[in-house]
Image 1 (tube, rainbow, N blue to C red):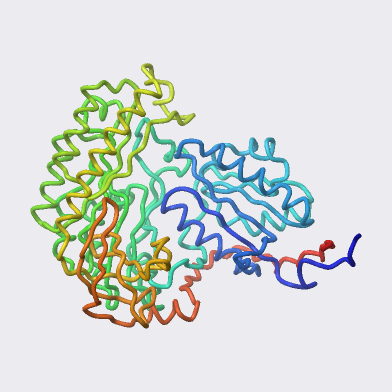
Image 2: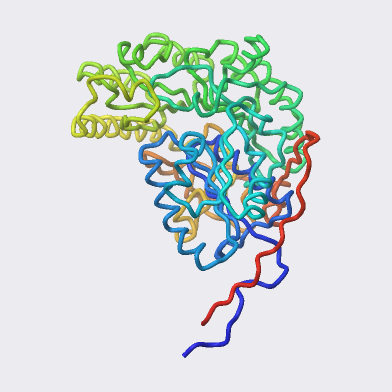
Length: 497
C-alpha cells in the first residue's frame, strides 16, 4: 500500500555538495579548493549521512586500477541520481585530464568533466550543465590560474596544506603527472608566506609545503636557493610550530636545504625522499637523474645534520627489465638507508608513459614475489627503528581520525615532530589540535603507543576551533572573473515510505 508522498528536502533549501578525493596530497588540497569554490557560489556541505545534490569526484591517474575505481564509483552513483532528479555529478582531477570525453561516453549520466588546469571553472560548468541540460566537458591545456588564488575551505583546524608550485619538469618514464599537471609553475615567496600567515592567524599550528617536485622550487625565477630560503622564512612566522614539505626529488636536493631543516626550529626533522629503485641501471631507464651513490649520500648528510630524522621513501618493484640483481640492489639500499617507513608499489602500466611501451614487462608472479620480499624487509626495519623509540619523550599534535580503534581502546592519536603516528592514553579535555607530551611504551611497524599518563597538555586555539566545528578558510585572490549567482535549490522529490 502506497503512503502519502513526502519530500527528501525542504523546498528552497540550498544545494548541497560532497567532494570525494582520490590520490596524492595535491589532490587533497585541490579538493579543499573545490569546496571553497562551491561554498563561495552558494552551495553548502552535505551532512555526513545525506545524499548530496552535487557529487564531485577528484580523481588520480597514477595508481593501478584508477580507471576501474572511477567507473565503479560512477556506476554506484547512477541509481542515486536516477532517484534524485536535478542531482549533478562532476569528475575532475588527473583522470579527467587524461580521459576527457571518454568519461561521458562510458558514463553518460555525468554532468561535468573538468581537468587539473581549470579547477576554478567548476561552479560555472555546473550552472551551464543545468541551463543547457547537457554534459559540459572543459579541459584546459595549461594552467589558467594558480590554485591558491582560489578560495579554500580547509579540512583541518590545526594543519594546513600550502602549494608552493604545481606541475613538474621531470620526465620520469613511469610517471604521467607532467602530462596531466603541466610544466612547473612557482608562486612568489610573498604570496606563499601570506597564505601561511592567514592560516596561522586562524589557529593553524602546522603547515605542509606542497609541490610535485617541491625542492625544485625557484626554477621558474632562476633562484636555486629559493626553497631553503622559503623554509627559513616560513619557520620564522610567529605562532607556527611545525613546518613539513613533500615531495622532494633526489636530483635537486641540495645541502642548503639540509642546513635550513637543521637550523630552523619549526622545520620538522622528517624527510620523504623517493628512491623508486636501488639499481643504477633501472634508475637510468626510469630517467630519475641520480644514482645509488648520490641517493645514499643525501641520506648520510641528513642523518649527520639531524640524527633524529625519520626518513621515508617510495619504491617501485618490477619496473620493465628489472633483473633479480637489480632488485637485490634495491634491497641493499633499503638495508643501508634504514627507512622509518616506505610506500611500496608493484609496477603497473600507465597508458601514455614511455615505460608502458618498454620491452621486458615482468610477469605478475615475479613482481608479486619481489614485492613480498621487499615489504617483509621494510617491516622488519621499521619495527627495529620504532623499537629504538621506546622510552622516548615525544611531543604530539593531537589528530582527528588517525586511529580507527582509538575509541574502543580509550586512546587518542597524534603525530610526533618526526611524523610518526603515536596512539596515546586519552585524558579529559584533550582535543584534536591540542599539544601533549608523553613517553613511548610500545611499538608496531607502522605506529607507536604511549600508554602512560600524559606529561603535559597544552590547550590551543586550534583545539578551540576544532571543538567549535570551525575550519580555516582562505579567500583567494580576485582575478576579475565574473561571479555566477547562487544556484537554485532542487525541486522537491516525491518519495514513498
